[in-house]
Image (cartoon, rainbow, N blue to C red; front, side, top):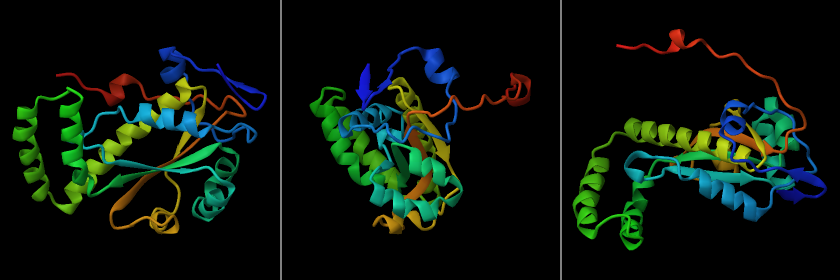
Length: 217
């Protein structure tokens, strides 16, 4: 158990509570903050999500200070209450030049014993060659799909730490990178994710029956 102020935040490893009881929370207890240490832990655990060639194109902008929230508010007018009450709002971006980290990733994998050096020597040139021929749209597709995977994992990890979240797609995506000093041509916005201690339980939501979404051959 971790405690912030006088409010207990309960951690859990119960899969049903984490995944099946997750709800999108739109109102948070503003008195509960998430320490930098715990936020780093949450983000680190979220980055265990899979990605194409393990290139990990996701980038996180953690908006937690009152100054940063004030910058975000005009860009997320329809979700202002979430921005104001959440412990943090995480803006998830996809890096369109994520292959620039390829050599570091492969070298580190060898250093940690996760990959034989000869495999790196064979696979790294192939991977970089593949990216040289990718269209801008293909790069964007990879960044968005992989960043979507990390976003879902981030929501589940946050819940395991005792916090709740809500993914937000309704904001000024064409402005957010520049407002926060990021290269808008390199970093493509994926979603905002509010995070904090829920002020209420939220509402359950229905799901389409399996025969409407799955087909077996």
